[in-house]
Image 1: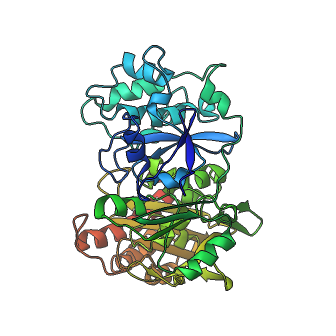
Image 2 (image 1 turned 90 degrees about the vertical axis):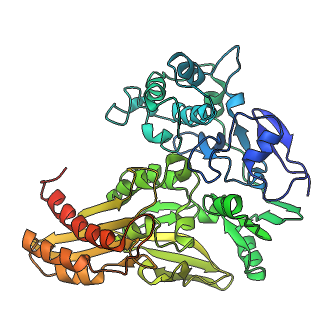
Image 3 (image 1 turned 120 degrees about the vertical axis):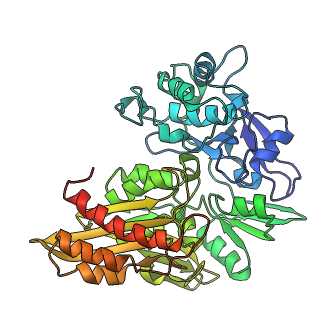
Length: 475
């Protein structure tokens, strides 16, 4: 098929006959839109950031910053994109571009267009100016986490932060702000083929499951934050790619009396904003999960679907006693997350199944926390990740669930530690004893992120930190 197209900077543009695995970044640059750059090809530098019109929470459309290097151009068939060139002109700079210029936010300029696009997404975020200033927000409500996926190698971050904090509200005649009042383009079923293979976006979940039943070797993608790296860095070329990110059946969201139901194709950002703090454990995890650019594309189902032992959502969801709804043409089944992982990047999910929904039972434990041990505070891969959910009644531990990541071939529950806590008084003595048990959980390994002994030590220290934080000793 050669009739695919998308709107770029307000102009409808045919995608044309290009290899199926062509990235949005390469496609844009081949058409002369060279503001977006390739710095890392794996979503860590943000030099390739562009804006995509996505369904909003507070407005029909939100301008969402994504990594153009990770997305295949086929995934944007029918969609709407704005690049740094579409924000302003040399004669009439966009407010973000103007502030970056006058406050010295650019030197070599390589990273600047990516910063500008990420900054513009936050500039247009509904309700931004109503947020109060704190250590990571300006008085204008600008959230610095929106720039956590953008790296600068020469300017330094202070003038970039100054530019962000100087932004006012969009003017009454701002075209992109006005565009947010209308719905984004509806997702379209599409098929794109080349010598490299095929890319298909089915029209419905049933169509996706039918296709997956026929082609169990297909690569299923949502935000492409994992598959895009495999394509760019390792030369992966799946013969069939099935995109499920816009399927309405996988994008449900419900907070009921007895459970929270999260559609597997919701992005981490969408979940964070829709939950709005109602699941405190996840609220702690979200800012530590990669960067805002990644969370704008990465889905909760995708993070679980990879089966990675160092994903950030599994430890948190294990502590929350979550279950997964798996769907296939044979029907649906519910699997407790604690029984989902079977080996290194292996799960009970059959080749013809998709994760449809993540279910979190209510009520939540009153004491929860998420600890991530990594070399950087944000935008890093875990050496160890721990999720806690503990209930204490009359000074005795009535229930405890602890999820661990990075200490075994799979994410796992710290069963021995839980047993050492339940039924015991919630005291420093009990916790120190349990910390010794926790240090022996899993089978930590040595790698470039951390040694096995360090990982074990961090497990025990994490439990102690959790206890002292709950006692008000640690902030």
